[in-house]
Length: 349
Image (cartoon, rainbow, N blue to C red; front, side, top):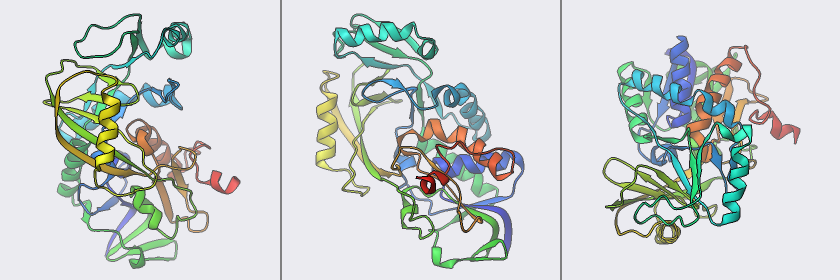
């Protein structure tokens, strides 16, 4: 029987970066994952953006999350030997002169000046881009190539004999004497990072997840820009194509792209750009969102051998690095969890 300190269930963005934190500290671990391409992390656009929402405000904990984000993924690139982070400005066209004026005011605000590149009073003049009122240019933004990250890290795990292929079967897990046994593995703790799959786990069914399906389309176009355009829909330039999205469906929670989803993205896209394009692909995934849009992190109140690191929703690329470090420090007894992510908040409420 193989014995480790931690068994991580799931190798999406959460399981990947949590295991890397263990790796850097020399802590013994194993990762179990079905090794497919169905996880929402694998299908995610991977955008990181310090400005969020319809009201265009700083994302929660933006200063803390983004201060070391580029360096974090840069070190991970060196570890897996592949480029994964792409720094690109995000351009958000304004809807009105009033919105333009609001952002001139925010530009003078120290809370925003470090992340706003510039406020444009008129169109950038990019053919096909609909921005008659100008727009906001955002710094400290870009995307992480999620499929490359997960596949390359997976190979590293495999080469180090730290990856177990398979679907985690809860009925095969037993807790005894402060240890967890799972088939031929014994661990001090099992950390569940399995995304939306955790909603079927009997130990975590008290946590109020709010799963949401998101769809993305891939386009081929002669549109010329290196910017990520983001206004009710994102348009991200990749090496030889563009991806656009996303949708938010709380009802039909499957991994299949739909005609309605594709149409919804195209309708919103046509309000931001006037370009010719060809649809060359589409995909969908279910994000593990939560009731208050904050992650669920911590140890089970009755079974401290079980932990959870999950619920990062649409912002996993920016949230997971910071909280993976914090969670490992917590597990080592060196740090408390941020109250807004600690699963104890569910009991407090």
